[in-house]
Length: 169
Image (cartoon, rainbow, N blue to C red):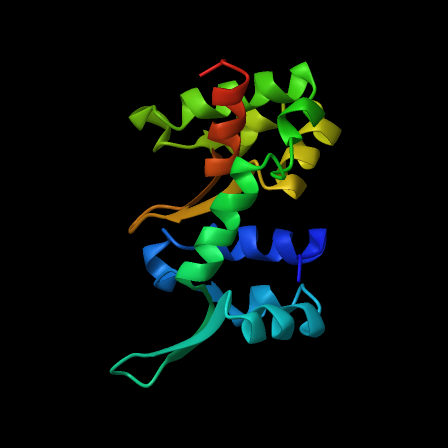
């Protein structure tokens, strides 16, 4: 049975956590609550997703959704068929310029590899918020021992891919 667009988006979202070592490649349960239970249970029943539970020595438990090899193949098949969302065309030139600036700030050790929140305030707030809400830019808090908390922004993998597709990186 073919997957709906929402179910495919769930698969892609869970797949983005595959490389996150902090969560052991699983999307945390609290983030999975954003999706409908029916869609998640359907994907689990199809064998495309699985529930994973990690228990640490201190007793802390992390439960989350993880992509199965069948789910990974489904994503690859959809991207080969051209069913992947073409969000790059949805980004305006101003969005791409903001992404390019954040990309360069995230490579500077002077700013601790992030764009400071004060510098981000110089951009049009609606454009910047749009990039945040779509997942192209991530908020970052950095607590330094003996110093204050630094706030800033970094570019996500999705943002880097958009820059590569636009040939601006």
